Image 1 (tube, rainbow, N blue to C red):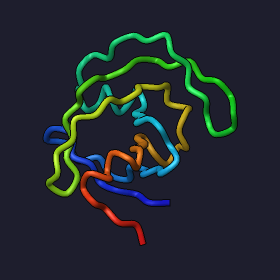
Image 2: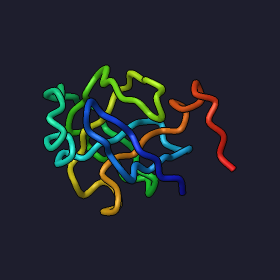
Image 3: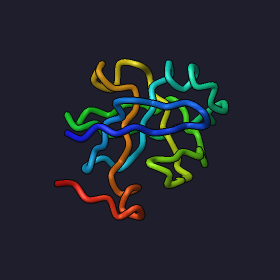
Image 4: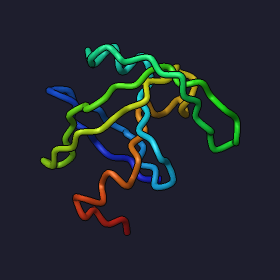
Length: 106
């Protein structure tokens, strides 16, 4: 399990779970509101969780600008209810987004 720091605007989000198997970026509603992020857009998609249950998505935030160690990214986040992620994490960042930065995991 890899944990990273992400800057969202002027805010630093600690303990962001970096997940190599995830296909999406997830942020919980409480953190989305706390950071004052743009109002998410409604969606009708569902997401298959690792335990194979289907979870209805809450909303999407398109083109959110973040930076990790000085490298900027424009990403889409799924905003989900607070009970979706392990209670230790408020954000999950998918590993493929970091490939552009040539990040290595050892």
